[in-house]
Every structure is written in structure tokens, then in C-alpha cells.
Length: 153
Image (tube, rainbow, N blue to C red):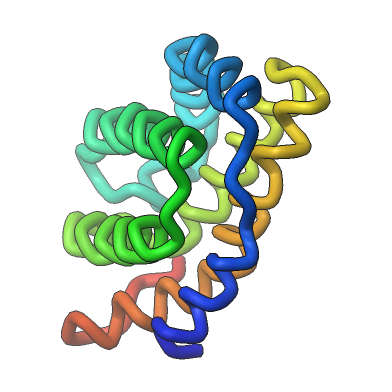
């Protein structure tokens, strides 16, 4: 899939409601803390994020939540695609493996299911589902922008 085709799929996502964005914003710090706790419990964490990258992972989680909050308030498909591609390239350069993204996105959804209202979760889910479905595309496009394959394990 090309970046252009990826952007077309992102354009199918709809702007969340202000109420949803407000709920997400009000719980953002709690959600980040819960995600960090969940990820730190993983026995395969070093394999996914690389040696000595736990603090960077935590920074990514905080930045991820802040970025998604801004997306939920003012959705721009091009900004979403460009930012996710940048993140894949930047963290790959720091030895994060592609398996990290699936684990992280799944963990976010588990935490959201437990800590957001049903309506908020229903509006958040399509964005995370889109990111999950497109992990292979993000990986390939990031790989094309850099030399060498992205480690998958």
C-alpha cells in the first residue's frame, strides 16, 4: 500500500465528538500510567523496545496520548498518517521492533475498554483499529524511508 492509499483509508475515519475528546483528555494521564504499568509487566519488553529503552517507551506513551488527544479534538488524516510514519521511523532507529506497536495498541484498547465510557470507547476504537490494521504498511513505508529491514522479533 502506498502512502497515498494509506491516507485514503485514514480519510474514512470520522471526527470524534467533543464529549468524547473531553472524556479522553480528562483521563489521559491515568490512561498513560495504566499503560506503562501494563507494558512494564511484559517479560518480552526488552525484546520489543530494545535494551535500555524503557524510559523512551514511557515517553512514547505520554506523547502518543497527547497526540491522540489533539487528533480527537481536531482530526486531520494527513497529520495522523505523517505522524505515525515519523514515529515508526524514529523508534525503529532506536531499536524498537515492529512487535512493540501491536502490543502497545492492544494494551491501549484493553485499558480504554476498562476506563472509558462505552460511548467514548466506541469513538476511540476506529482509530486504534486503523492503526493496528496498518502496522504492516507503516512498517513497510518506514523501512522504505530507511535502509535495511525493521526487526520484527
